Length: 483
Ligand SMILES: N[C@@H](CCC(=O)N[C@@H](CS)C(=O)NCC(=O)O)C(=O)O
Image (cartoon, rainbow, N blue to C red; front, top):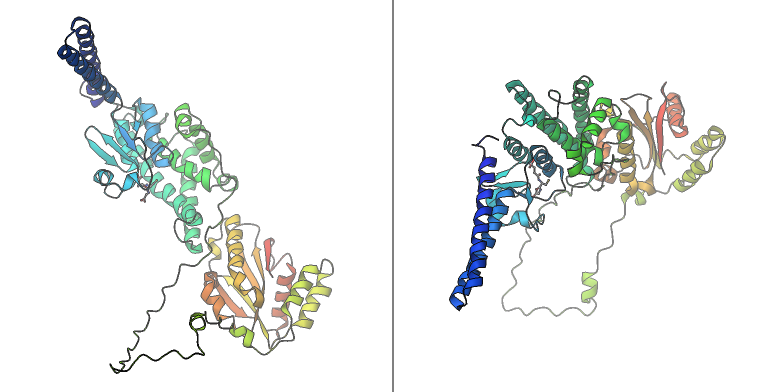
């Protein structure tokens, strides 16, 4: 070890503390034996205390790096794994409590943004997990984790940035809205997945002819990349997604099973499902600002009017009856929507002759309208289960229109990008306003009213109700019904 390195200094300090502690302890022991006076006894006890302090000082010399932020997240794993490879001991801050300890003034002095992790070092605190991992790695002079040449060093830095900006960020953009950390937006998810696939594709190409990211052994870039992939594999990247990147899979499983990784990460298991979107709610719309109420000036002397006996307080405070849905005020229709839904569900054979014919027999073009919808961003439907989830989410959000609507949604194609098209029956002559207001997916589709006098359009509607395959010359990946 280089004599100028901080580790060398700490090791020397440790030996010094231990030797001094032993000498002081021996002095204390002898004093206790030979002195009988209270003064001597006191002196001996003071020696003992001092020796204990020095012994502790020696220990602190070993655990002189204090890590704040627990050891259960990928940002902590980076430096803990680097420490295993480097032979550095890191002490975890005792009784760390997320959301409490990282909000104290002492913590904010170490990291003004109040996020974890933070590493306390003899030379001051460090925040940002990559910076901490770099520091831990550089505690060892010529650490192979940092390569053996300037170009290796540059490539290690390159892959650390790539892993942070192209992999980690896009996993987070996909995962966080699904688990409710940030609002969910379908087009934002599409973009995250497309960007992640692009990054994983590039990584896969590199790993097709390289075991590790840089050179022929594990470097800090592998540690940081694996920690970022760990979040993906364990939370959202299911096997059917990762199998498109076989070299990334091989790389990931090889690394997480290295003893130094395993010590920190434990047994790693790939998730078998993409988390369902935790909140189906649209972000709350800001309410219109209340109009300032005119204050009527009462003549000063006029006594307060006694309450009329007919109106009691309870009645005044009673909630106003919910305004009726305007669709309930439409003239009655001869078409009973539930009857059609029952016919659709109960027809198992001769669908054309029974259900489709029944539909047109029941259909009331005055009371209802039919609409084709076509997803505007079909190019982004590159992942089958994400496309299916998207359609599933749309149908869930349509729940509020169940009394007034019936719908069929087709996911079309056997290869990505998949097309999403549908047919909807709505009460009234227009798509109800409350549906457009409440279901944000509506804006993601183009809507065209079906002209039922046009036999071609009518036949297209039939094919959709029937899940006819091939549909417009293509296989169906799935057909979902809203009823
Ligand atoms: N870029 C930072 C991210 C740190 C971060 O986001 N930490 C999260 C926990 S993993 C946190 O402390 N969140 C608490 C908060 O946002 O107040 C790093 O790599 O260290």
